[in-house]
Length: 363
Image 1 (cartoon, helix red, strand yellow):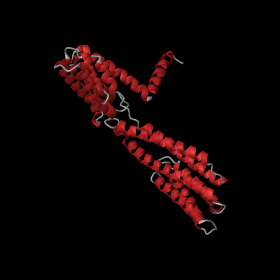
Image 2: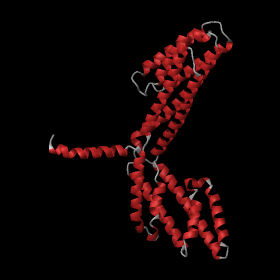
Image 3: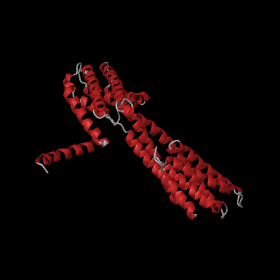
């Protein structure tokens, strides 16, 4: 190995380490927040209409507006500034009231009470807490120069918000579409496991209610988490210059989430029906169609597990359809048994048919 190679190795390791850190959303957010705060701090004295002694509000503005997505940074920054403006106006009104002779305690109580009520308006959103906070700051720290303090406070915070949004937009703007796609794949695997367990339970003739109850609860929690991830990914694409290259991923994620939510709902119904059929059946319907039902559920599970655009997708769809048709024919064969058992078997048939129909669009 040459000396040049030895010297370049630490550089390559450092570059690799930096790349891995950049892939961590929280680490990237922390780095951008630190950078925005430092820039705001050093540039704040250059702001017109603001006193340099209040420059420390600029890093605060950058801090409160730095969020994982550009759209959220814009929304929160605007709401914070709106809350500040409302609070400053209330604080100035309180100072005016105090100057005409209203006792200070009454002024403080009224300003804070009205500020809290005002902050409850939906328009303030994330800036709701800044209404009473700004009012309190103006009352207690403005001193003999309330107008000068108020203008500097608002303008310097606005500058910090602007710096925060700019840094978030220009420096690796976050886009979580790929991460949401990966999370959807884990959800697909979770639904597949429940279907495979259902097939095994039908084959063995024993459906453990407690086991399936825990699995379905976990599945519901996973759906909620993945749905939140997809929503955040959609939010991250707004006002993001990187979204054009991944617009198809965003559309795919929306369709996949809708399909998996429906499939999970149908899977829950399927398990409930299997438990109902087992508890009411005395060897009639279940025993007569056990093999066909097991094969149908297993093939449907394989179909659900098929990734989008997989080359074996059409073949797996055909296999699932054939297995379903075999169960359908077996179920239609006259046999002894209660009317409710036959109805439950038909409801299971409907669940399987709908899961196949939902999956058909992704093959």
